Image 1 (tube, rainbow, N blue to C red):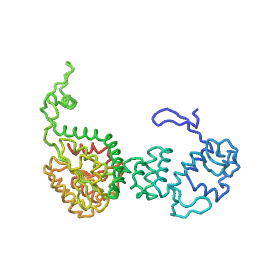
Image 2 (cartoon, one colour):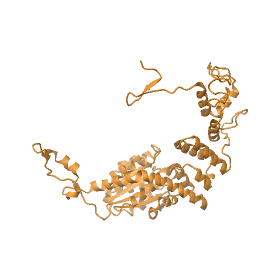
Image 3 (cartoon, rainbow, N blue to C red):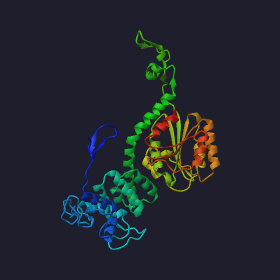
Amino acid sequence: MKSESTRRDAAGFDERPLTSVSPGERQRRWRLVLGAAADDAHDDSPALETGDTDGADGSGDDGADGSGDDGADGSGDDGADAGTGALSGDDRRIDAALGALYDRGERRGERRVAGQRRGGLGSTTPGVVRWLGDIRRYFPSDVVTVLQRDAVDRLDLRQLLLEPELIEALEPDIGLVTLLVELNQMLPDETRASARQVIAKVLAEVEARLADHTRRAVRGALARSARTRRPRPGDIDWPHTISANLRHWLPEHRTIVPEHLVGHGRRQQSLARDVVIAVDQSGSMADSVVYASLFAAVLAQMPTLRTRFVAFDTAVCDLTPFLHDPVEVLFGVQLGGGTDIASALGYCAQYIERPRQSVLVLISDLYEGGNGELMHRRVADMVASGVQVLVLLALSDEGAPAHDHAHAEALAALGATVMATTPAAFPDVLAEALR
């Protein structure tokens, strides 16, 4: 008979024992989770009223009196002091790092005041850098990223991000890049150099992950769009040719007679498609701006595409001349402000010279601050002329975005493709539009 301390893996019959957690270790973990609240609760009530005998009253069997086996005296494995749930060793530094960010009010001896924030990281850069060092030491990189973002939001560290030594100490990720883009107009020269290095590092990592997929998807789409029934020998698409000629199977010869050849036409040296990317640079679209600039830079390197990239709010900023350097593109973006999609579409329309060979990628949550009816008319005109209009409500990993549902439904009814997508899926979405 199977023990209750085992569990079955959902994919098969691999059974692994459940980890047994001692009462002392359980107390330690709750103390780290609750932070100052655990101390306040202990001060307010000398004994829990739940009937537990795990040493919460200071006299239980699990060593909460300072003599047990679970290390509750501060010298054992669990690192918790007698009954109080106090911590020792590395646990103290972990608790201090979390408390600096998440604890509110004063600890021990005073009631916490709702909405009052306890200062934890200090007002100087060295204090913040030490805190960053602690969270890197004790937490994995994905948790470090969350803690950094929370620190910026909860403790108002934006001003400190203008100091180069702090930027260099941060764990670089897309969230940090978007924050630096938001602050780029305020960055002093010495900090701007550090910020550029951080942004370049993150973009290089993202490009290494996405660029090859993008190039393969685009080239495959262009090749399929040029498929021909009279291919040259080197251009024959054998899987599709075999599929198209299965009815001509000769069992006695164990072969297929390919009466109809299917292949890819040779790509011309001339431009195959025009791609215009227009991205809304309002503050809610920060992640989308970063990814859009990176994809635009990758597409601009492909000789069969003519790529134009514009960022807009109530005005349009054409960043196409800077596509050779995605970092420079991002420093040309000014996040925030209003939104005038209709004007941006009017600007893009002047660069669509071959409608049936053109794709317009509009990246926006569609909260139009300008003329909504004019926006609809311009999208309708583009679709009617043969332009593939792709409206992305978001280009990020953050999930389903908030957007204007009425405008989204109206544009979809006009023939535009309206959707949200992740950066990993975007190459395939673009490839479908290019076919």
